[in-house]
Length: 105
Image (cartoon, rainbow, N blue to C red; front, side):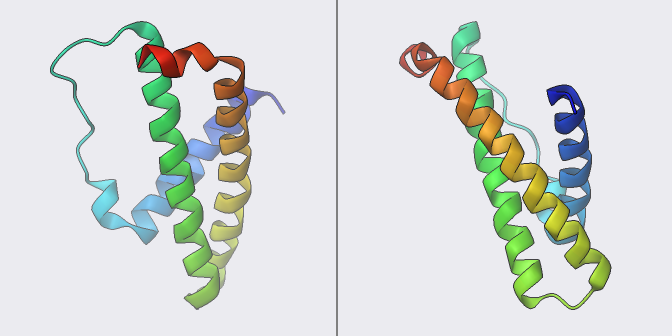
């Protein structure tokens, strides 16, 4: 499976998980910047925010697995953990291959 396919499926699963498990996050407004950032800083910021977002989805899914009752949600939680773990690995690999991006932040 290509990276773009994994990311597309991850985003779809995450959107469902957020809507089901964290309705407050589903309606949260996106961040905006008062001043434009350099492209490398935007890339770094995107990777760091997505990594935090993915980690939060994993934690929410673990809570569902540990304390939830619904079989469908538990199935979704397992998929979220799998997909977001892969996404974090991709983001970490990007950071490792772009150490200069953190310096430009």
